[in-house]
Amino acid sequence: MGWEMNQDMSVRINSDKETRNFVAKVERISGQNLRACYQCGKCSAGCPMAAYMDVLPNQIIRLAQFGFEEELVRSEAIWTCVSCLTCNNRCPKGVKIAEVIEAVRQIVLRTRKDHMNFEKLPLGTLRNVPPIALIGSMRKFTS
Image (cartoon, rainbow, N blue to C red; front, side, top):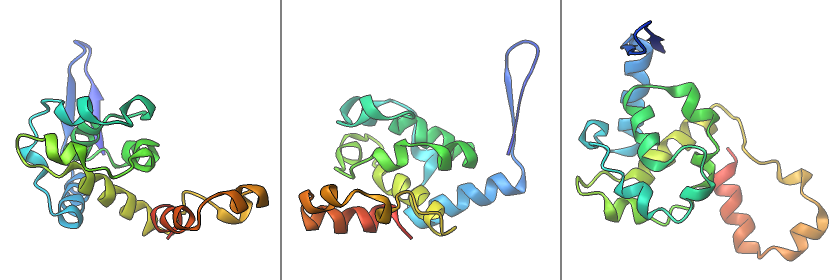
């Protein structure tokens, strides 16, 4: 991944093969054209989980556009998204942001890195959580 801060505070982004491969992989898995997003911010403005995200939905798209894989896979926002699809409905360019977020989650899970270990949850928690919530969480957070 290539970027560097110049002395005049400008940022230079290097588009190496690894970066292009990541962008292509996100576009292939999500079925979305990342370049269509022009950063209006309507997705983030309507997101009910934005206050809890370390990276907002429009920022996720921007990081994906520039191929910042490490920043995206380390982000908690990809796991915080509840897939309510509000961002998809608000996008004036028709970019399905929720699918892009899901694509990044899939990239992480395909490396066999689970986000949550259900075996470590307290038994009391498991008893009080609706079974459908557990199943949904297992599908979202584990490979």
